[in-house]
Amino acid sequence: MQQQVRDRVPELTGILTVVSLALVFGAVLGAVPEELLPRNDGLIAVIPHLNAAISLTAILTILAGVRAIRQGAVGRHRAAMLASTLLFASFLGLYLYRLSLEGTTIFAGPELIRQFVYLPILAIHILLAIVCIPFVYYALLLGSAYPVSELPETPHPRVGKIAASLWLVSFALGIVVYLMLYILF
Image 1 (spheres, rainbow, N blue to C red):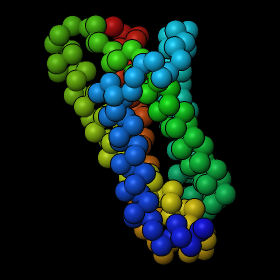
Image 2: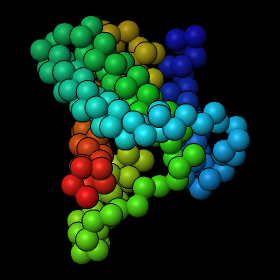
Image 3: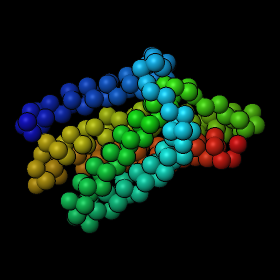
């Protein structure tokens, strides 16, 4: 199995990216029929707050993973990056559930702030979240398909740096969006 993944990392990255983006855009565009999802209003109400906590935790695990690999602690790096991936999957599942049932959240602050602060931050957050997906998948697939001793000879270190950077900024901007939507306004 590991050899099959190794031989098909670009193709698998493409497939996983397309499937992930199809799920996100399907939820955004309302393609998921509401009746397919059990409605839990209590859960729906806490998802934004829970996702902010998940995002903050993911930032910490990504930073821990970066620090670990800089120290040569490959096992800690792998554990931190897998934790980051699980946190992201949890975030995304909760976000898509809420989005499918509630739609997008309307910014309630002043129009000037919406137009010149909120929307640009949201746009950059969304763009980075989309762009980071193939980098994250590529780094994860390389990390799982190659022995640790061979990873430095693959694109994994370079792609991993890009993935971690995009991921960190996207999560951080997501927290800023949360603060603007649910705390400040």
